[in-house]
Amino acid sequence: MNMRNRIITISLGVVLCAGVVHAAEPAEVEQFVKARIEIGEMMTNYFKGGSGYGDGQRPSQEQMRQMGADINAKLTALLSKHDLTLDQYRQRSPEVFADDAAVKQYLSEHPDLKQRYEALPLDRMGRGGSTGRGY
Image 1 (cartoon, rainbow, N blue to C red):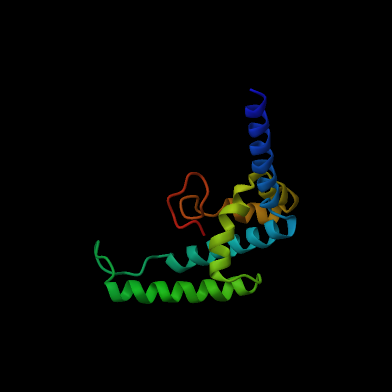
Image 2 (cartoon, rainbow, N blue to C red):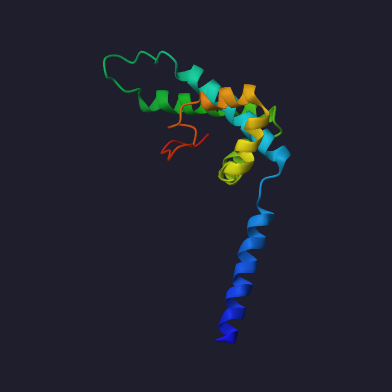
C-alpha cells in the first residue's frame, strides 16, 4: 500500500510539472491571440461573397490546390509579422489556446482585441467544440 501511494504521488508530480512546463507565457499568449485574430479576419475576408463557382458547383481540384497555396502564402506572410512560421503556429497554438484562463485574462486586459476575437466565426477558429482547421 505504501509503495502504491508513492508511485501515485510521483506520477502526479510528473504530470503537474509537465503541465507547468507547457503553460503559455503571457507574451506567447499575446503573440498567438493577435495572430489568431488577424488570421480569422483574413480568412473571413478571403471567403466573403463566395467565389462564384456556379449554382451549387464545387471548385475543381486544380482550383482547390491554387486556393490552398494562396491561403498558405497569405498565412505565412501574416504569421511572419508575429515572428512565427506556419508550422510553429499549427504546432503550438493548440497548447496556447488550451490555457483558457490565460487567454481570457489577456483579452480582458485588451477590450479592443476581445471584441475582434469574439467576432471571429466559432466553427473555424478552433473555439466552441470546433471541427474546423483551428486557425
